[in-house]
Length: 67
Image (cartoon, rainbow, N blue to C red):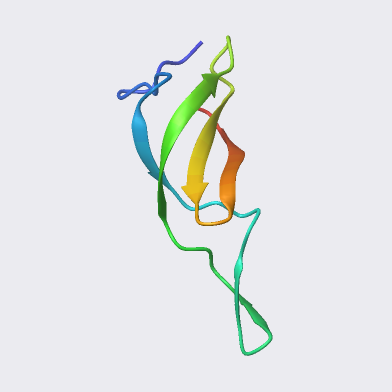
């Protein structure tokens, strides 16, 4: 298993660009903004990690590949 030079750990603050809630402008899909979040889960084999974002409407979680 290849280790990344900067492994992600549970509780770590990260900046990610979620794809599950894109921003719409003038009826066209735009790229989601980069958001601050907190790592809440790392797959045991480090295949993906889940980040929790606190937004005005509530908490949203999204998984991202690798670590």
